[in-house]
Image (cartoon, rainbow over all chains, first blue to last red; front, side, top):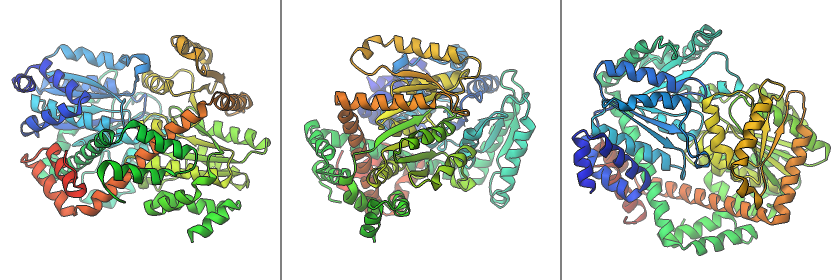
Length: 318
Length: 318
């Protein structure tokens, strides 16, 4: 059944691709089988991470970007990391719904992924989904996250090109978030640039980059662009700067460094998830609960309990 | 030297406590030794997680809360999870600086933790720091995070009481974030309640809770409060609802459930970190790089590489 799905997906069947993504998302064993089989068809797509604080207009920007990219005939994939939860039924957000209209275009594949499940589960599911879209034939894959949390940052920084969106006039918290994402961004977008304070935000970013002057001598100096996603202003320019960055990566060979980094992160994530599974198999729930009870009664500390788990499940002494 | 630090910390020496937190944060081996030694002195503090979207005024609220709690003579600990990065030197934010003035009070211990390091590193450092503050004698420990990312949510949901802050009139993204945090909150705070739309936000939250009516029959129905952190309005009431929730947990025995959950999460995190270390020891960097090169050239897929890593470093076949 999987071989059949893969054949159809490689032949351009969107529904088969969607089905494969569902499988890699929900079933670790299947993910392993699928990735092993499709891996040699991957490596062609350019992965663009788009992140930024909540309310900075990422989805609207992406909606407009898709239009621009499609005009060139490229096949587009979108993976939107969705912070919603089962509590609300994981309803699609307004902006996301707007973007979704591109789904009727056979050259656009959009997929939302929820941040449920365990630590690392999302990162693994995202990189596996990227591989499916890559094998499917996407030329560009956009990965959109709300860039505040560590995992979301970890996901986006494995992209080939990282776009960081911001808006004029945000508070302290946002400043901090921006700072945390500063070092991973290749392109800064000051969105809602028709609002007051846009030039000041650009100036602030320029200043921050100037502090690192030495660094840019031998590498891509992040570009700063102004957009108004709502009207589409600046979006064509953004796309051409993304392509420029792609050229830079290819010409300098940095693309290989980036992809090595991505591969390494991926292997680590898979290793963690395989181990978690193994522990689940080797240790009964009651055994674990027995240890937890001892922790609660202060007869055992968490580190000693972890040592027991490792020895019992993996035969490893630490 | 560690025994000496622990003795001084147990005797109420704040600087010794600070030094111990630095050690558990930076050195895994030391963390293990310290936690094993102090664990039996822990279990008395009530841990309150405070989270919410950027700009919802968490730090200001906390600043005011500390004042209220101190009036009762309780010892207060604060762990603020800081989204800044080494790139900007990890500068303290304006709000955080304001809060910091409590540091001169011997009954208040404030600590910022940066979201650097690997997946899970922050969660481990935070729970170890909580234990130091608990053993030190804190009656209440506030853990403040910017509640958007998965790790931040994972940290905060291990608290005894979870406070979720929001503000009137936020956009789509924020709605989603709120939804993601909905199910873990015990108290909702609509901060900046003097702004337009506060009542509408309260109404919206009430509505959401009403959808889960059945659930609240046998458990704590989340409370909704309005505050104006800037002026201190509603902060005393917030503190009394936090205490009410604590009473509820103690009376019903749910505190044990919560703490079992926390212990389980903790053991899992420690196990992952121990394994990561072991892999680092057993596999040379060159061996890993060799595998990564094979992945880049498409001779090997990431899952097969992970299998090699597991077998070489842990002798585990999957």
